[in-house]
Image (cartoon, rainbow, N blue to C red; front, top):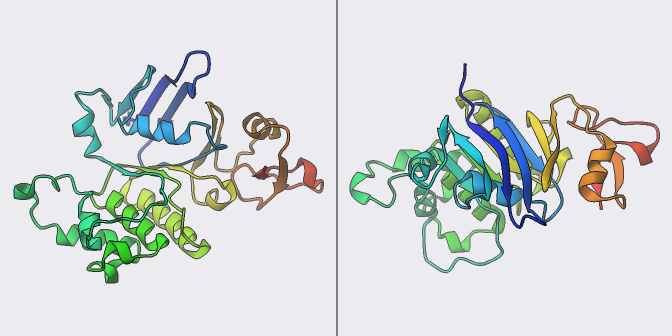
Length: 269
């Protein structure tokens, strides 16, 4: 039997009377591409931080690669994880080359005497995101989209078994977004890497991911490819004030109908 890459059981976080996450259970196999969608404040980023061992839950259990995640095992397990945090709007001040920013993602970056030859790993990671030609550029001079792609290369440089991405398409145009999702799909298929990605727009990711988890404090629904997401799930996550529009019939959760007010798949507040 294959050991799951991630196994979460009854995880909760936050005040008992108003938890941020409540009773989360989730399992992820090798090579699986999971998208997480939900409104602002739904606990999506918090869940990624807990999986990465950065925030301890109040209750529940997490296994990574078949091992219990604890403060004692965290350091070793995180060597097999790449994490792209949510993009924040602040300009970097330190003069660093793009090469150095990406190299910071290597497991041995903090121990220079054990680094070995980093150049090939950094080159390959930058090649993934179409940034190889900017390896010696000043990171401060990059556009917002270029910085985001360099940060993604930093998350990929250690060839992680699990990649956690918090809104990775932020600051990317539609063409770059599509290339990003195609790259992640290829990495899952070719290398067996698993991906958990937080995104707002289910329509943008649904043709690439294997499943979508609908999160707002708890997981209201976990839809596999080809499965509809019931309208009451959208309303449970976003409230009755939303208008749900039909989208591509091949999308996860989409079920076009002749009555637009009762279609599924692409939500607007």
